[in-house]
Amino acid sequence: MATVKAQPIRPAKMERIILLCVLSTCLSAVHTQNFLFSSKRGPIGYKDRDEQRDGTVMDEIIKTNEFQAARMLDGTTSLREGDIAVTSGRRSKACFARSCLWSKSVDGHVYIAYQFSPEYSEMETSLIKKGMENIEKGTCVRFVPWTHQQDYIDIQPKSGCWSYLGSRGGRQTLSLQNPDCLQVGVIAHEFMHALGFVHEQSRFDRDNYITIMWPNIWRDRLRNFEKFRTDSLGLPYDYSSIMHFGMYAYSQDGEPTIIPKSTKAIKLGQTSTLSHIDRMKINRLYNCGEDDDY
Image (tube, rainbow, N blue to C red; front, side, top):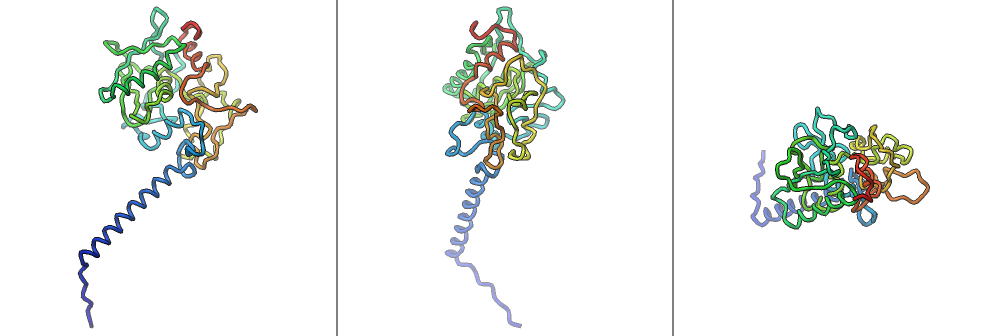
């Protein structure tokens, strides 16, 4: 029987083969990236910028956390509703009970100590302070640099934008990844969680005001639309709260996931600042005066 001798591959031919392999890998990576970032194929939480001009703070947070932050931060802590850190074994939705509020001073203010990671630049810490000032305006909350206080917020550029809910006692992390989370509205949103507020559409009475379009939500993110029996503090439902999801949050096909029941033209959420009702919530939760007093 005749045998066929294997022909050696010439160096020039080998180079062409390697080049084709590299090119194929690059094209595959580009295709994968386009697939992941397409608002019609994944748990994006926002529509492409050329389709949506009125994005919300939460859209920016979802965009960052879906591709940067792990759903499990460590062995015992995970993210709920997209950006609330929850540690197993601890209560995570009872923050309208007074047990997880920050202490109030005798002068009527709520002083919250904070510490910056040394990894932030001077420009970045200045931007974070602007987000904190957004919370302070019209409320009794004041952020002060940490010196010796037992309870304080440790601001870190970890993976993603997230916070624990309310005061946990001792040092607690609030993550503001740089540069993605360093937007005034995003910063204020995470500090609202640290004050004890969940997302507005999580209110137990939300079905009177909005319709959740369950078929349009990416199925792995359905839990982000649960509702909880929280205290509304006697305030109306706030479509324009900085804590409200956008209309296309976690859309799997580019269609709305939240639709207001009001017949008026309503924009959900905020892009950069607290709403008037957000400020009223803070003052009522912490038994302060009205925002005109601050």
